[in-house]
Image (tube, rainbow, N blue to C red; front, side, top):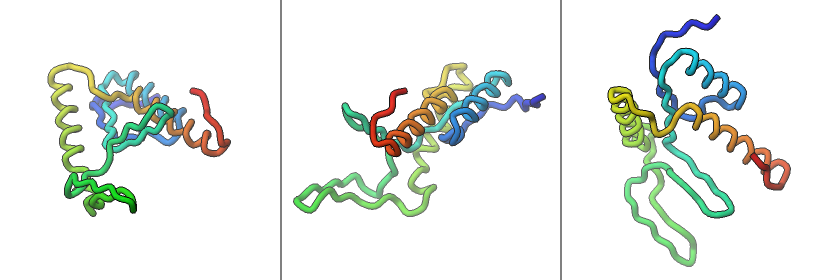
Length: 133
């Protein structure tokens, strides 16, 4: 029998690298009756209709394109420097939504869905063709 501490949860994705275990986490959250927000600080989704990307913070927003390619500043060196503002905003959202009793922008169900997409992308790469979800 599981024991629950009754604490709300903030988890940076992935929830788990296995869809089955991620679903078990989602079930445990539901059974415990707590709120769980998943952080999506960085992501890139490339599909047949376009690209959605949220990446690392860079020292400047300068983007130069020329005959040699696309040039930007490298991301800030230290992980916490690159991500500090994103984490601050995610945690601010987490506590504001908890206090107001409102839903999170990203839930544990979104984390499970993200892992399904990642697994399908890996399978598609291995088999060399699209994989339906």
